[in-house]
Amino acid sequence: MKTITARSTAAAVAVALLLASRLLSAPPAAPTPEERIAWFRHDKFGMFIHLGPYSALAGEWRGKQIPVGTEAEWIMQRFNIPVGEYREMARSFNPQKFNAAEWVALAKSTGMKYVILTTKHHDGFAMYHSHVSQYNIYDWSPFHRDPLEELAEECRKAGLRLGVYYSHREDWDHPDGYGNNWDYDRDRKQFSRYLEEKSKPQVREILSGYGPISVIWFDRGMDTPEHAAEFVDLVRKLQPQCLINGRVGNYGQDLMGDYQNLGDNGMPPGGLDEYWETPQTLNGTWGYSKFDQEWKTPAFVIQRLVEIVSKGGNYLLNIGPPGDGSLPEASVAVLHAVGDWMQKNSDSIYGTSACPIEPIWGGCTVKNDRLYLHVFHWPADGVLRVSGLASEVRAVYPLLAPDRRLTTRRDHGVTLFDLPRGPHDENDTVFVLETAGPPRVEPPVITQGSDIPFELDYMTAQTSGRAAKRFNRDGKFHISKWMGPEDTASWRLLVSQTGSYKVKVRYAAPTAWQGASFRVSIGDQSLKAKVAATGEWFVYKTFELGDIHIDKAGQYTLTIHPETESNHYLMYLQSVSLEPPIIMVE
Image (cartoon, rainbow, N blue to C red; front, side, top):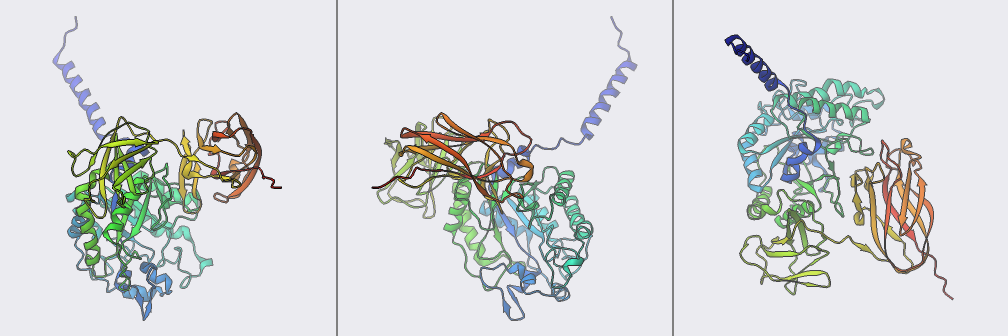
């Protein structure tokens, strides 16, 4: 039997303390992509703030007006304002009414969960106390305050997440930045010098000096994937938990960020399998314009939020304050009304996912075994019809009156229930439909006209494995990410005309993907083909694969997938078409 001495006990304690200190001092493991984006998937709704020297110009320069509907923050480039003159104007930029606490309170009361401030727009002026360049709001203007520091503090107090916008490629002030070819000779620019002197150092100081940054919102893409990767690596090194938006890389190449941005004010016609965000203005411009008074209504904002969340995205809503930094009254009025709706109905937004049905009366979100039915357009007969739902319905009730259960019935595969006499909310009345388990829907069946080809695109596809419905600013909507036989896209067809069908596939593929084999199958027939290069990235071409003969009318499933496992994507698929046989009329 061993004798335990004081010395051995002390040694064991010392070893334990040493191991504990090492564990405590070890850097935390980098989050997985799923862990990094989890909060973003849950929160759904954020505020964008465009504030800079352009705000003080209010859409006008020396009697020339930026047209309504055109971006007022681009005024320097639109009118080719010389750098010296723009800098002199920025000397007097003084948003003394900027109150970070008021901005954060407005965002929070509206139901927004994160705030993104423009720390440098394309004009090159830094909206924080930069030590990289004196051309910043603290050193250059009479303001002598740091809006980013103040906003970071108020977000921490309120429990909101802080994000930053940074134009990493475009800079009209720096002689080597993109965009200013009226002051600087395009042929003499050294873009890498701008990246090393200003762009990367400013991103570094933003991510190092203001505490946790939840998302960095780059803009205008980047000239090469290598340069974009340098920014991605920089963010990952300094703040591994920080999300990177899709505009970090070139718009005509594959996604390099954590989520994809649609075009400004954009909306997909159908859902996507990859997470995305729509940035939108409250009027027609991002920066302030005294000429633009075309404000969106509370109903528009509420319904657009629901539509975006119904399709699986986030809504980033912009406010462009005037040059004094105050809250625009028209914007505040709209957001207060949206906030009133969110206070009552936010359960139908936060933590939900895309809706598997396509309602004609409004929108639909999903959480566990609940469908939240958002009714924008009240049916004239007072009956709400939910098509395509295959799950058993356990209960239906208004979100704001859960004890008031509504009677449901089924008619030819459609779930129906009688609505109350009128809407609870004129903008959007929400009903909860509980199902037995997660809601299931029947995939859409594509029907056929007498002489019209089947056109099969991403909207009606069913994806499995790694195959995903995606978006790219240049490539638009497509299916990609498939790398092996289990990654498929399929469509259900109701064929009414027998005969031989020509099968055509429209896709884009860079040279490196050339030669990969894939198969298109329908019924017990299939066609095998090899991918042809179409040019760089999103250059789409149509290829005829051959004929498939269908000798019996009825329902079929068409599937396309890679033949073998690969270390790259198969293609960017835009559509598959089946051209029916020509009917000879005597």
